[in-house]
Length: 317
Image 1 (cartoon, rainbow, N blue to C red):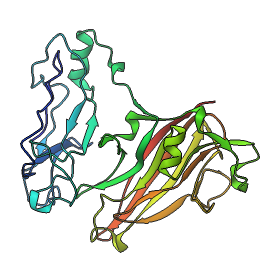
Image 2 (cartoon, one colour; image 1 turned 180 degrees about the vertical axis):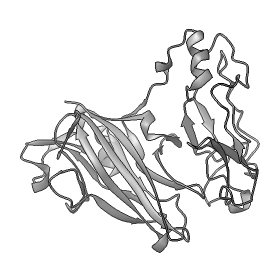
Image 3 (cartoon, helix red, strand yellow; image 1 turned 135 degrees about the vertical axis):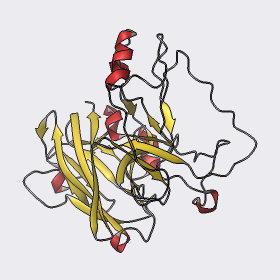
């Protein structure tokens, strides 16, 4: 059963919490593929495997809208089903559930404005630029957060403070001037006297009022990927539109995990065991707008699976 969101003129009332947790239940989500076919995503059931609902065609932009669009509309963020839905008897330990049975960890995906929906919004006089990126500037945030839905790998940004997931394209990571620290003198950090640092400890990050960035595989289970390992690769890095060597990630001992220096192929890729949560120092040598493209990759049943996303980081002077 796909979700067809109707954009209303007033925000819906939030669900009332209370009454204790309820079973997750087995829920289905339909997602349109680029080929125009709808895929049924059910926990533990791969598309085309014979389980769950059959594939159905995606609605064409030329078709009339299936839901009535109210002329006076506003954009509302929609929490959607986590692609890895669980039955209660298979839920991970430690997870809570709201009264509807959803995992409390939710996706915050804004309505996609395409086809007739975009035309309807334009007719109503609503500027589609209202779908703006979310800015994250502090707290514990897993910047690289991989998930497997039974058919595909995905990369998300997971805000640990609010238990909210974002598509990387919908998020701007802000590094304020308060992140500036003395250059620790590591050769790969350049010759400047200062760098902008997102530290590898939460106490330091909180004291400076900056992000505490994480690299997570904790939502990947054992027994799926070869050697129970996936790899995060830095495939490109730019600052203000040009290739840059001003970004690096290193641990507390000064060992480089990643280095954007385009003149070397080293320090671009690092393996991580599944089910792990990792922190390191994220360093920027100059202010500006960085675009960092990462790919997560693993092997499932002899087939290489991957997902690639670009992250925007704005470093203030």
